[in-house]
Length: 136
Image 1: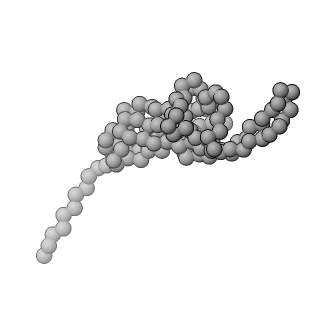
Image 2 (image 1 turned 135 degrees about the vertical axis):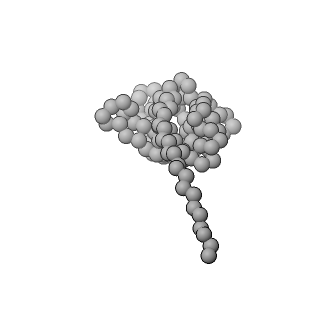
Image 3 (image 1 turned 180 degrees about the vertical axis):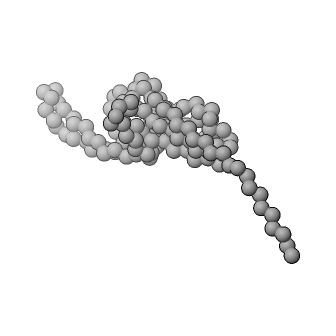
C-alpha cells in the first residue's frame, strides 16, 4: 500500500503600492520612437517579483482627494486640438488619440506616452501620477 505524503508550506503574501509622479518638465523625448517616456527606479521589483509576482500600473486622477480614481494602463484618451489663425479664429480641428502604457524589468518601470499620428504640442505632456501595485 502506497503512502502519499504531502507537504504544506506556508506561503507569505505581500502587496505594495507606490505613487509614481512625473512632473511636466521631467518627461523625456525619444526621437527614435517618437514618444515621451519616464523611467522610474523601483528596487522592489526584484528577480523573484519579476518572475513570480504580479505588477500593475494605473494612472490616478484627482490624486490626494476624495474624488481620486484610477484607470489601468494601457489607457487611450481621445483628444482634439483646435488650430487657430492670427485672429484666434478656429481654422481646423485635429483629432488624435493619446496612448499611455508601461513596461517593466528587474528594478525599473518605464511609462510611455504616444500620440497617434505623432501629433504633439510644443511642450511636454502634463504632470501625471501613476500607481504601481506589486503583489508577490
